[in-house]
Amino acid sequence: MTPALLRRLPAERIADKELSALLRRERLVPVVHGTTYEELEQVSLLLASRAGLNTAEEPMAEVAAKIAELVAT
Image (cartoon, rainbow, N blue to C red; front, side, top):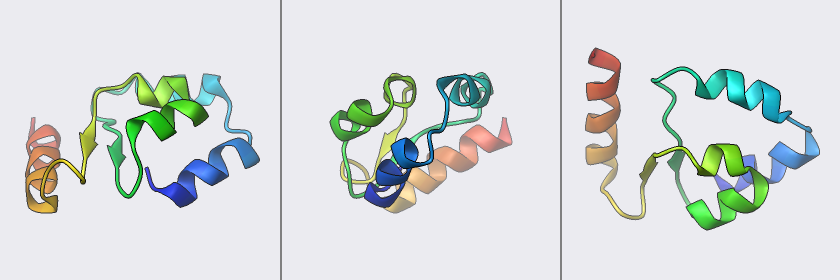
């Protein structure tokens, strides 16, 4: 999730139903970059409610390693 994507979500009217379908997959992990979960929550409660990663709190290499671990399982 980037600031640009946060601006596009409401503009493109991505439905909660579509987001729900995507979130059912256990491998979908929101990664906020250049924004916060609080800002994401203002745009999509569904996405913000999902546990994810934040590049402001962890180095990019660690975020990438965690994603690789999730994909490998």
